[in-house]
Image (tube, rainbow, N blue to C red; front, side, top):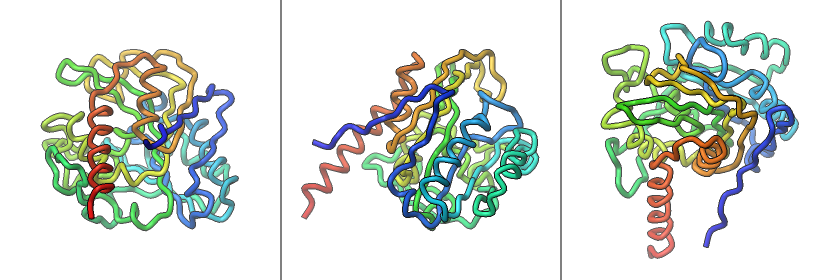
Length: 274
């Protein structure tokens, strides 16, 4: 039986990031933070948590190139959002030439096969080729609960990966969003996302210093926020998201169990093939 992935829970003021093993020897590290809107935390990750994450990566690996990659969900550009949210100032103060900010919508693309034994909508998905060109990938999500079709929708480290998909391919009516990734439903499409690119990620972090809450579907216009004061991290996105939801007393997303079940089917198939 495979060991249950461990998740570290930190109080926000005492958060020290220990990167996954892949980061220590990596030449290039991709960090995908939730920064798609020109709105501060908890709609997006806090600069304090991002700074601590970068510090942990740099201490683990002084020489790696660290690529901060995000695709926005807004009319504003990534550079404009970085300035408004404080990322531009953070990077200037760090003065680290090995850390760069890249717009996911401008990167060369690659088609990633959906490894799920039961794809929902996409047999394959297009995302930056860079995901295959780095040695370590980390998702840094903000803990959010919105309401979609009268049902709660939880966003954490897995949902954060939406920003990596090109709007040119996945947009619908709005040019600023990825409407094709909302049908038949976000929880169902997240299954395809995990088995296309999510499984490639070596680590996940969820910024839960506040629990974002909205009665609408809009993840940048909160109804309220509840102080939680916790940061969650680990090497498995599904385990990290599950623990964040459990301790934040948020609705447990059904897709987490579905993905776990599908992962076991793949494991069973690989163990008994040949």
